[in-house]
View (cartoon, rainbow, N blue to C red):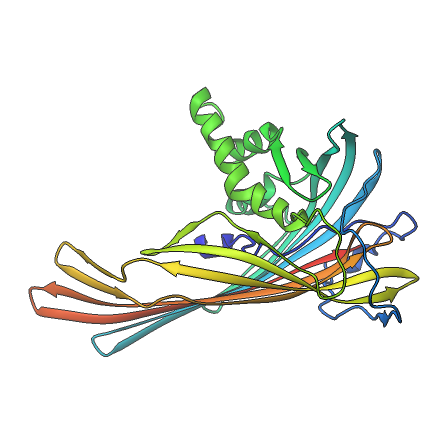
Amino acid sequence: MKHLLILLSLPLILVSCKKEDDKPVDIKDKYATDTTEIKTVQLENQNEQFYIKYAFDKGNEYEYRLTNIAENTQTVNANDTLLSQKVKQTLTYLIKLKVLDIDIDSIYEIGFNIASVKLDANANGEKFHFESSKSKDSMDRVRYSEYVAVLNNQFNVRVSKTGEVVEIYKADRIINEFLKLKGAIDSVTASEKDYLKKDMIERALKPIVVQVFRQLPDEIMAKDSLWSNPQEPTKLMVFQVQNTSTYKVKSLELFNNDKIAVIDAGLKTDISGDNKVTDRGATYVFKKPVTFAEGKIYFNLTKGCVQKSKTNSKIQISYSMEVPTPKGLEKGVKTETVDNTNILELL
């Protein structure tokens, strides 16, 4: 099941918000992700200047549908034997936010509640399904404990008007539920519990939060304006990776009488490091990872939120190996491709 716990990976999605006059989504359609582009009309004046910023009001509630479609394919060719595996999953979160407070530094305090989760996955022909509103089986609750633990256990987020996530906190109920599901609530020390909570925030909650809140430029923008957000450096196999999210305002459009900035999103990747490693007599030669990312964001300038966004990222990694054995030198090649599509929708 490890492969079924793929978290959202491309931080190009910006914030969306719920219009106060929107009707609640029909219960039967609540997981029905719309993969199409919204229909807009291009504004005649394409030279208008504007700020891209979030405009939340205290007490307002917002609803989001966040969908991740992930596919992981691996092949290993060793000693003339080809092994392959493929995992594909669709993971949908229904998320409710409530603005609890706005401090003097214009930092929003937001209650973040994952109200519902649905997972459909296929791992080498074996199918898995979990839907939080229907799956009551105790074994399912343990098997999908990472999802069950976050359900309706509100945690808080502090975020700026430019989308910078300042803090994620009040996640105690989530870690308590997780430990209870694992049967470990009475067997961990206070320090171990604190470590697990921090790990849960970084590994499970933050990857979701940064899909909803993305840092924006604090300056006047216009058509063809560019900006970028460097990410924290990461390590991928033997390589050091520096990703930078890139954005460009493509056009100004009209959607239901609201002004929309249509933004193209991309990713610039710098990869460095020695590609050859020797470990206990085995030699590994890594190819430089091949990366690709693109997306489109519809930012509602009238309401101060993203109307809709869709991004896609793809990465391919490959390496060869030579391993000495009593029967002689064994050679092999492993290739892995990971494809992620993320869709954020206003409900």
